[in-house]
Length: 474
Image (cartoon, rainbow, N blue to C red; front, side):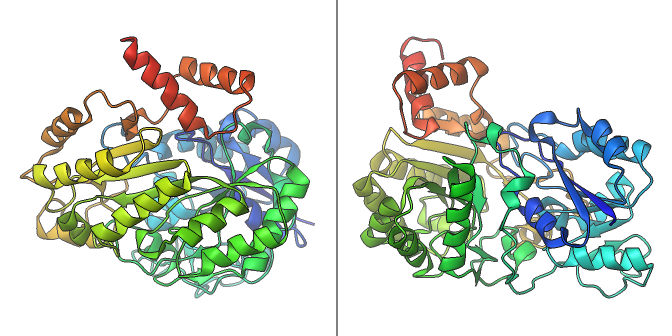
């Protein structure tokens, strides 16, 4: 049986480390055909790579690229250079077998990243079935032309972009995926990622979800989702689960059905989620979420200005956002809020409108992340706006971060204005401040152990931050 080494190259830990569940699902999809080993670089960062390659002696190597950069104009970090030095270059020295790229970050720039690393094969889009198909053709040395999503250097379409938007894989690949990952280091701050759907039917101007996963929601059955939660909980014990969908409560009723199935089975689990969409909330939704075990949510409205909600092509109104904020406060669910400033049409007035919302509707116990400027991604609506405004040129590479900046509100002016609005608020932070200092983190862990706290880590950190600001340390 031939051997396949799968490598999760991501080692970014801000705001918390994310385990490579997607790559472990790919491992599951081929484990009956190949001997599979997975290497997670999150904490090891390449230190053990040479030993693994020389002892395992793989016939194929797959590398997952989760993120290309930090997406922050305030704290820019281009991850591919470190991945090249710590992973790709050592692999080339250690082995001559095919190295195949994939992952969400790779899928945005499939040809450019293949060129950046000087490799020959990649998979753009979902890999559960495509990866197995590519390996089969490489085994048999047969033509791979025409297999959807496969990128290869000698392809006649190498100058074109290919993205797969297939049906949601129906095979239950999750069974045993946790066996490929050491979850010990993730339990302190990380979570087990759950996808309840792929794709997104919304039209936010900057978003890559529709490009990578398709422009409609492709949902999993609630019973299938809860099967995964139950099995992982039984195998790993006390682990936090995180729904990582673009929006958790879309389409209408799906989130409620998931929660109801968790409640029906009487599972005792801790859950958090990204992407609560203001257009689809109710008191009943939050009641079900709390009963199901949700202990934290993320809300990413991006703005609370009616004009900016329109310009960003959000699918909800300010009134719906305000209604959701009231529901969140009523539920008591700890919430991390995310706002982004500097999009098309942003002015001091639209910023003031968002800060009015923050001061009025968001609890000081909740975290508010503020980001300046929007990362421009290929083929998004923002990309075409930037072209029209001549901020970028046709054919210009966006692999290294390029951010949208209005000439009426340049980045420096925007940052200074936001800093004035933040003032001494302890719970309003720029995204560049997302990673707490080692000293603050150490104190938070100690406090949580001493007081046996079960609250989200961010609330413990916020109290420490407030004390430090009151003492004049910050």
